[in-house]
Amino acid sequence: MTHRAQPRRSKLMRPLYFVAGIVLVGVGIAGYILPVLPGTIWLILAAGCFARSSPKVEAWLVNHPRFGPSVVAWRRYGAIPRRIKIIAIAMMALSFVIIILSNPATWLLWLTGGILVACALFVSTRPEGPKVKES
Image (cartoon, rainbow, N blue to C red; front, side, top):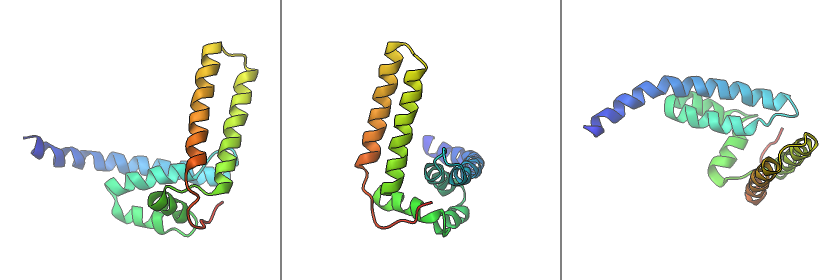
């Protein structure tokens, strides 16, 4: 019986994944325009949503000359270009400075610092992969 329920659930989820993909593409494009918002991560998430809802739109995103190379590099190699790594880690450091200046509770400072260090370590240890067009 569980086997039968799976296709039905997946049919119901497709439109939700599609809408989420559209929203994530919008945020991703905004990230390519706004200097303080990352763009690629949202496009990677959008491609994942489209893989579950619309292979045609997923193919458009993956083959897009501007947005596709970063998504493909992440999918194939788990790669983050060096320039993007530097920007991401610098933004994490800036965020932590802002948090320090807001004088939070000590436990919150340690928690936030730990999370940011873990994220920075994750980003810094990803391969840079083949040359990827960045923006």
